[in-house]
Amino acid sequence: MFKSFDIGKRFVSMEERRAAGKQRREIAGREDHGIWTPPANRPSAVSTILASSAGRVPALLPIKMARMAASPFAFFRGAAPVMAADLAATPASGIQAQLCGDAHVRNLGAFAAPDGHLVFDINDFDETIPGPWEWDLKRLAVSILLAGREAGDDEDACLDAVCRLALRYREAMRQFARMKYVELARYEIRRRSANAAVRAVLDKAERATPAKILRKLTDGGERFHDKPPLLEHVPEETAAKVVASLAEYRDTLNAGRRRVFDSYRPADIAFKIVGTGSVGSRDYVVLFFGNGREDPLFLQIKEELPSCYVPYLPEVPPFAHQGRRVAEGQLSMQTAATDLFLGWTTIDGKDFLVRQLADHKAAIDPLELKTPALFEYARVCGETLAKAHARTGDAAAIQGYCGKAPRLDKAIARFAQAYAAQTEADYGEFTRAIASGEIKAG
Image (cartoon, rainbow, N blue to C red; front, side):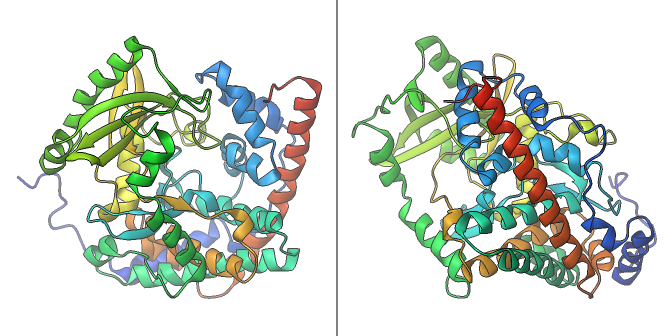
C-alpha cells in the first residue's frame, strides 16, 4: 500500500536542508550570479527567434514580430527562447524548483480563484518546467529593469527595484521555509490595501467581468465579432474538431468540475490572437452559456509547444502532452487558487491547454510602474515567485543558499543591468532585420 513512500527513512530537518543549501555556494557563489558575458559562440537573437517559430502558423508570425518590435521590453516578452539559451550558460546552485519559465512583470497579475475571490499570482505557464530557481528570478529581474525604463524611471531607481525584488524573494523564502506545508499551499496574496500597485491590478480585475467580456467580444448576442486577424470565426470543419476535443478535455477535470462544465453548452467558436510570445500558436475561444444569457463562460483552447528550456535541461524526462505539462505546472505553482476549468486536450495530433479566457484577469501596464509603484510591485513579485518556488522546491535549501546578507540582491541587480543591455542590443539587431526584410513584421 505504501511502497511508493520511503517509510522509515531518516527525517531530514529544516536546519540540515538549509545547511545543504548553504553548501551549494561552493558550486556557484552568490556573487557569481552577477556575471553576464555572452559566449563567443552565442547564436544571433534573430536566428534563435526564427528557429523558435517552427510549428507556428506562418501567416501570423508577422503580427508577433510587429508586437515584439514595439520596445525593448516588448521584444524581451517574446524572446524567452533567446534568454533560455543564455541562462543555461550562467552559474546555477543546482537546487531545482518548478519554473514559470517566462517570469516577467506582465505574466503576474490578478484573477478569480475557484470560490470567486481575487488573488494575485503568476498567471502564464507556457514555458513551465522543472529547473534552476535562479533562472526565473533572473528573468523577472531583467523585466523589472526594462519595465522601469519604459515607464521613465531613472537607472538608479530601476536597480533599486531589482534589489527590492531579490530582497523580498529572500525574506519570503525564509518565511515559507518555516511554514507547515498545508499553510504554504493555502497562502495567497490579496492585500487590497497594503500594496497600491497590486491594489490597482486587483481593482482592474474586479471590473473584468464575464458580462463585460461578452459585450467586448460579441455582437451582443451569441456570436463572436469577426475582426480578422485578431478574432475571426473558424471553418465548420475546424469548429467541429474543437467541439469534439471537449470530450477529452472533460476527462481531465475532477468529478465536481465536470459537473459544472456539463451545465454549460457551447454557442460559438473563433480563432483569437493573444499576447506576444504566444502569437502564431493555434488559439481557439469557445463561448458557452449556462443558466441563461446572463451566465456566459469563455474557454480558451490554446496550442502548447514544448518549453523553450527543454534543450538545456536534458535530465528532465520528456512530456507526453504539452498541454498537460502546462496545466500540471500551473497546478503545482498556484495550488488552491488555480482556474476552475484548467485542463488539456488534443486536436489533429497537436497538444492544447484549456483554461478560462476571461475570469476577472488583469495585469499591470509597464507604464504604470513609476516609482514608488515600481518598488511596491517589485517586492510583491519577489514574494509571489518565492511562494511558487517554495511550493515546488526545497524552500529551506533555497533559503540557505540565498542567506541573510544582500550579496545575492546586488548580484541579481548587476546581472539585470548587464542582460538588459544585451536585450537592447538584441532588440537593435531584431529591428534592423525587420528593416532589411529578413524578418516580416506587420
